[in-house]
Image (tube, rainbow over all chains, first blue to last red; front, side):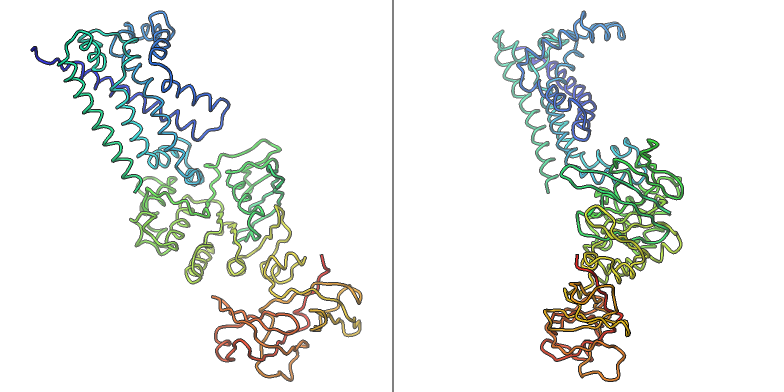
Length: 222
Length: 361
């Protein structure tokens, strides 16, 4: 038997890390808006952000392909700035994974931010703090445990994305083939041992992340 | 000088409509819960936006609906102690105060924070988190934090309501001493008449979103303008009665209370004989004697029997049955020396001019 190619697993970890970074920044900002601001269309925004949780991955992948493709608005902008296309690259896989992880991030972080006593924020305002200072020195530290848990969930979710990734990034071995896609590929081609090895490795990483998340949340409840 | 004139209507029918002025010193906002005291503080701090009105302090406008001015909360420089204190749970006592001292250069903040904690007698708790300090200490930390930002005025929302009497009195005297130097206008919301009279330079009485009385605490609490204010401010002896007879020559009138079980001499009012009135006497104006007093200038001397003794921090209240149930305030020493206890026969004595008579409302 040829040696197991670990590239798909490394790619998955790299994609998940990049997607998590993006999702934490965008997700916390969205969660703060949803938890603290009253504005027209607030619940509509929440619904849009949550959609990837309930839509088939192919539908999400289709939307992303239309938006990010070489003829799509985001894809054209990306190509104009960087000189290369976004789809069928590992960066495309990052966007697909991030879109899938966003609902988990936003839902969890929104609950964490809503759990911070608004009176503490008011107190900081009376002490002369700007909205940014209030967020950074009061809201964020007090919601940090929930946000960290949300980030770990987002990472675990990104690690396992399949459908949207396949549509947006494709299945190019050595370039865009993530672990989840490689498992599918190996099974279809009858390389059962390779599939089983990747399945075990991916499961182990996902289990470790979820276990740590639970420990983190349980410690916070004490 | 703080000047406030605000109006705000709320869903459900409640409306806040108040006008008040607070010079340097402590102004008590007194009234039942839900009467609009906290809303007034929030409107001054900018945490609640009035429908219309004007708030200014020391000549600077914080809010003016007519001119479309509404300074953001952070620029108002208002020291606010919330009812639940709102200390930041993830910061130590010192960090809480330092956080508020941001106007100072970074190097001076720590010294300033420690000096303030020292001033309030909680320097020993500087490195503890709020959850690890006692209620009284947390209170002092919150006061230190409110002052660290060099505020133009101080808003205190029932800051001492949860504390024991001795702790409370200690904090009150510290706060008064500190403000003799600072000369800040301080608005102090409370339910407690002891706090109001002990701390206040002025008192403003709230009722259902409106100011119904304002002035010196003893004046406001001692000579209420309406029977309802008397009830609110705890003039303990408040009885319905009937004017029996007027004596224009002596300038007095006789009022019977408790269905005629007790007749009291009161200063002559404009009420005609037969008029229904409310009669009020402060508990502190009534003397107690264990034998019938003679040669006393007080014209009201009533025999009765002690029905209950209620010890308190500042004074003990003794309830005496004499036609109606009277309440007299005595010191702890008098309580012991006179051996006042339930069932003991006593005489109540008070001056004609300690009696106030209001029209029934």
